[in-house]
Image 1: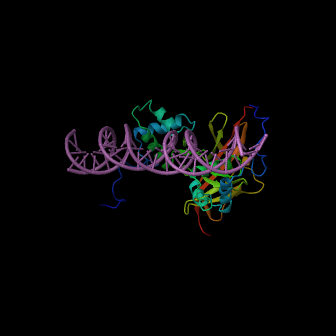
Image 2 (image 1 turned 90 degrees about the vertical axis):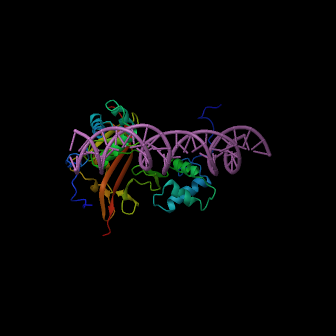
Image 3 (image 1 turned 60 degrees about the vertical axis):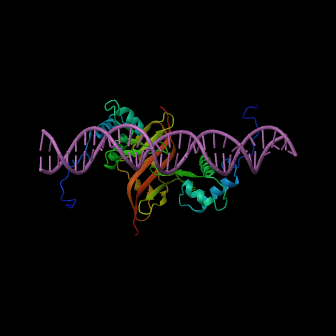
Amino acid sequence: MLPATTRKRRKPASPEDGGLRMTRQRQEVYDILRAHRDHPTATDVFLRVKDSLPNISLATVYNCLELLVEHGLVRQVNFERESSRFCPNLEQHGHFHDRGTGTIHDVKFKPGTDLADVLELPQGAVIQDIEINLRGLLHQT
Amino acid sequence: MLPATTRKRRKPASPEDGGLRMTRQRQEVYDILRAHRDHPTATDVFLRVKDSLPNISLATVYNCLELLVEHGLVRQVNFERESSRFCPNLEQHGHFHDRGTGTIHDVKFKPGTDLADVLELPQGAVIQDIEINLRGLLHQT
DNA sequence: GAATTAATTTAGAATAATTCTTGCTATTGC
DNA sequence: GCAATAGCAAGAATTATTCTAAATTAATTC
């Protein structure tokens, strides 16, 4: 067997998709996430994607979501032990969960600020991933 | 039946325990959390508490942990979709998950800082709860 | 372009953490 | 002490997710 590096790649990875081959199912799942940025669960996505791909299975939706997350196209958002939600916003941001309506809102970082300014990180800590989840109520003003 | 508000309370809530009656099981669970502050899972707590209460059931441990969380004596910490972990540190703090060892470290806020200084909260948002989870590697220095 | 090989999808079974139910036990208020 | 209430144990049930095996689709080789 040839060494992995000299074997031909099946499909040259395009930089945009993070090396992920965009099958019909993966594309639809991704498109749906970008069309309605309301932080749907896997089941939500499943129900939506059925409109265009009636035969898709829930397992495939889970698969696609996992791959999209692995390849950095989508973020997985967890609140407490509820179902995971999925978010195509790749900018650094946190989430606010409105207990009144159950909706989740993206929360931007103020420009020029750094979380490291606020936190006392342990000696030698190298941060790979940051998750900020807020819960509360959204009052109309 | 008398209206709920006029019925006598079984036990006057002491301010320390948040109105929670401290049964043997609850006390042991709470003590164990405070003795080893290593963010154990429910099963970890179950195994530890068995030393002093060999007949305790896992369901009771879950019950006790839930009540301790509800009454504000303990915080529930979730990383991704892993088992919940429990933390008796009530000061405002975040958590750092070292992917190298799997351990979780408390991360203090720098004194005099406010997360609201870093985040652009939605209009009218009233924050009830903040969760900051970091993941990365801890290198020895 | 047909055959071959590999990747992907599907459907349903399996898993794991957690919650629920039920019958029993302990505690409380009187 | 007795009735009422709260708490506990054991195991069943639930739920989101993952795994497995077979079928399908796509890519590669000839």
